Length: 175
Figure 1 (cartoon, rainbow, N blue to C red):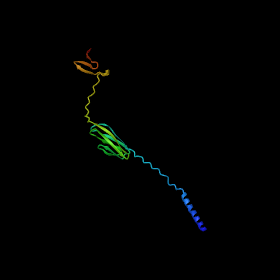
Figure 2: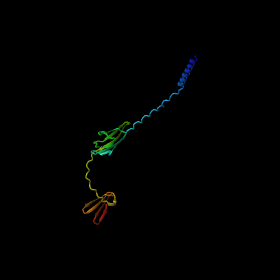
Figure 3: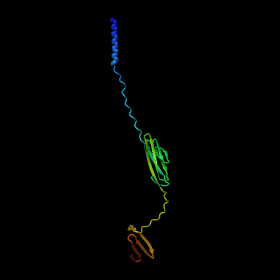
Figure 4: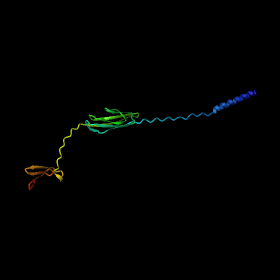
């Protein structure tokens, strides 16, 4: 019996050691917790500019529209032009005053720019110019002199001073 008890004691000791070893075993550390990934930055908002070579024209004249954009995937120029490249120019000849608007669209939203063209009436052909009136007053500034020939006499009229002087051979009279 003694051997049996000895065998039981050994078996019981081994079982205790196994249970003690399993109970005292440190837990295995798992991978460190992962931090959440920051969200991707929002797409940049598009920008667009539109300029006209002239904002006041006469009917029948041509204007150049120039534009440029950033962060845009689609651009539309209205009225009447349609879809355009991100950067460029086009010529227009409006018959009446008009506002052109370009809209730029991209992942970050949309943007607009406008240019107003004012159309005036057609210019009449230029009038024939008259030859300039000679300055008969000379150094006297704004005085305007008219010369008239009257029976051999020269009459000088100074409009600034309202003086009438008649010149005749050998005689000068002030009026």
